[in-house]
Amino acid sequence: MTVRLSAEHKARQAAQAALEKTAMDVMVLDVQRLSSVTDYFLVCSGKSTTHVQTISEAIREGLKAQGVRPLHAEGVAESGWVLLDYGDVLVHIFLEDTRLYYALERLWGDAPTLSLEA
Image 1: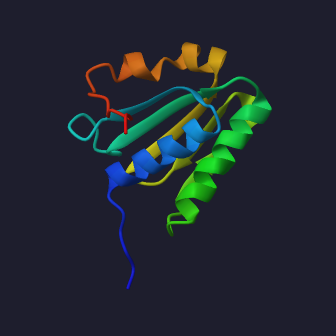
Image 2 (image 1 turned 135 degrees about the vertical axis):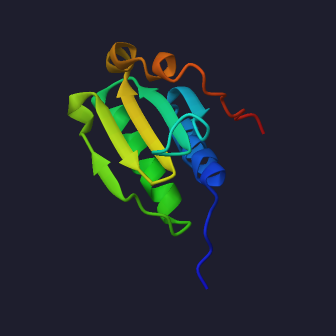
Image 3 (image 1 turned 30 degrees about the vertical axis):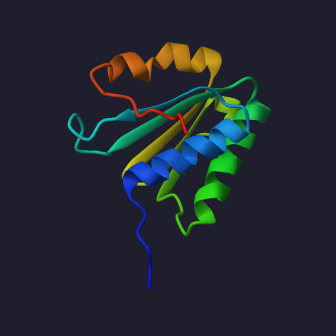
């Protein structure tokens, strides 16, 4: 029997994996009522391309351990932006300057955020 994780659970698990690798400014935006593309955006930053890659790998491995694999992955750490598409959760891992440039939090400013407190 296959267990299907909720979108919120995936978003929280991905955020936890990012936090464990000291990702900066981890934010989960609930875009369910604003977007037909996905339910949640996870946005976080790394300090270097190596850090972005480490965060990306931690998220992939953390969700893979629960039987969840990305439908699509785009970008490389060297570009300053990695996107992991889990269908109902889109993970954006940026270098700090790249994140400021694209300003997804501002673009989706009407979206509520999930509390990541335990």
